[in-house]
Amino acid sequence: MPAVRRKVALVIGFLATALPRAASAQEAASDPFAAARQQLVETRIETAGVKNPEVLRVMRETPRHEFIPEAMRARAYYDMSLPIGDAQTISSPFIVAWMTETIDPQPTDRVLEIGTGSGYQAAVLSPLVQDVYTIEIVPTLGERAKRTLERLNYDNVQVRVGDGFLGWPEAAPFDKIIVTCSPENIPQPLVDQLREGGKMLIPVGERFQQTLYLKTKVDGKLVGVPLQPTLFVPMTGRAEAARQRQPDPANPFLVNGDFEAAFPQDGSVPPGAVPGWYYERQTTLVRGDAFEGEQFVRFSNDTPELAANLMQGLPLDGRVVTSIRLSGAMRTENVKPGGFSDSLPAIILSLFDEQRRQIDMVVLGPFQGTRPWRTSSRLVRVPPQSREAVVRIGLFGATGTADFDQIRIETVR
Image (cartoon, rainbow, N blue to C red; front, side, top):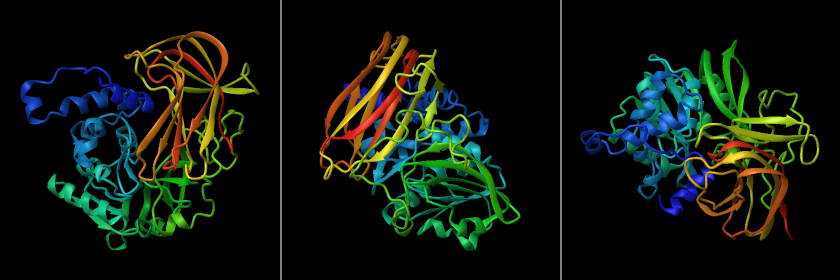
């Protein structure tokens, strides 16, 4: 595998490994991506907990490569988000599969999707439900998605360019609403357009601190519980500009980098989650024997290349912040590389430009074997085009146990 592609896989930590079966010559000729989709489902979606057989079938069949820019197609079946232009991204396949399963799609459902993006989520929903109505606020994306869905004969998908938070009133009521961009609060028009007893899956919260909720409409009001912390692209336009709490890219910091934060009492963080962090896999919050303080996070994995990680996004404007220090403490026990020599625990910082394209990556580590608590740090020069950053910690496909504590980003003035 080329070094550049392998580095991308290390950053995301979700690269699929050797094919579970060989594709026949006939299958490869008719659909050269079929084996990659099969591999993706078996190694990244099923193992992460998606069980609905119809959802898994559709994930094997939906041509994700058709919904991303041609330059990105080599990464189409990695379990990672990818930039699609206009500062938007296509969600990772696992997230799409998990969200689809979570709303329990039925053949008679009429589903409203807010945040069309590439059209991939709508394409996954299409074979599972009666009708899909999907709205995209960015005209170029919405028009491109419409053309792609029409070309691929997703005839039960209707696409509209407009403000998704206003919904699609003339097509209401909807049995399910799935929101793939994050408002600060649930828009009332979406509540009004959801039928009684219907379900809404929506990420809500601050720009870089969101939680996915599954809500059910009961007596005209939404009731439900948080499912998991997450990070979704925000809506553009008035809804985003009107946020009461805006990110501060001139003062980057990690939330709960010492893992000491108490669980909020307002139900905004699901039980068992690590406050401030998201997309957790095989993660345990441990009390006692920390490097500093009372708590730390532990990742344990017995299956090579199976995901075990946490991540957190934050604003970081390279025009204002020219240097930062990335640091953290790590302890390992019986850690061995996974399917690749660099599938090892690390602290990884990725920097992104305003189009959410990765422009730089910094790695503390990787580490292996058995070693006591030890700190690592590095001074990072921030490129002026940087606008956001993502920090990832975990085993990244390795086996064994890795503990992390005191993960920090500090501005160097």
